[in-house]
Image (cartoon, rainbow, N blue to C red; front, side, top):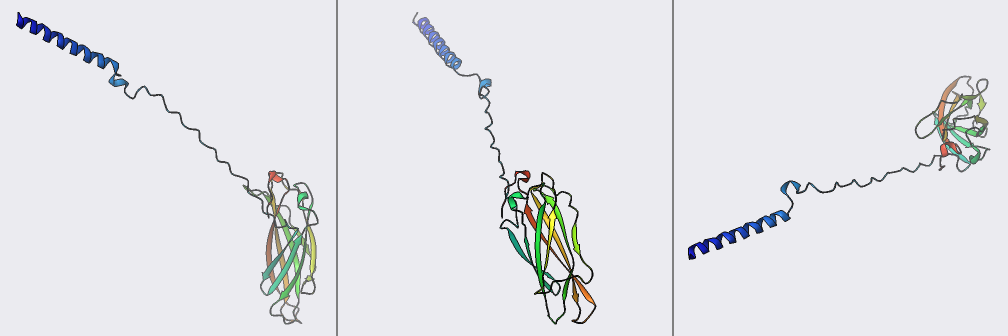
Amino acid sequence: MRLAARRRRAVFVTAVAVTAVLGLTGCGAPPWAQGGGQAPVSASPTATMTTAPQPVRNDLSSGSTQRSLTAGSVAATVNYWSTLSMDRWTATALKPVNLSMETTVTPNDGQKVYLQRATMTAVPGNASQSFAALSPQSDQTDAPGYLVLSPYSYSQTFNVGEVPAEATFVTLQFTFEFLVQTTPTSNEFAKQTASDSLTVAIAGGGDASTGG
């Protein structure tokens, strides 16, 4: 009798232990659910980088500019300015460009320097492209040309016509062709050429900002 009672108690304890284990197991997540029930992580928004427009170069922002050019033995000082204020240099306006020039020659043995031809070509553009050049403008006289050896000087006005509305600036390309006497009494000349360029902002062109 005692042996049978002990066996019944052992079976009862074992059953209680198994029930407790099953109860604990039922409280946890099943293995296939581990890590599989998490909500997807949403990607954080990416900040959009914006680039501020760069100021447009303007060589006439102060009203005028002076350049020193060299062509062989000839040194030229050229002053550029416009009688039209920069805020009126719009795409459709007629935009005057004035220049004056005088030269020296080294060595100075008494020979003269003449300007045979001056040419300006205007090329409109913006930060991403260049547009078709406007028709070149030239000032040319009979040989040997205009005497430009200091104290004599040369002055001229060129005009920049209408440019595309998308243009934010115009590049002015200048070419100066000189004839220099080979000797003070000679009728023979040596040709020398100097080049220069200016960039001038177009007011309101492409909503550009203007810089010096």
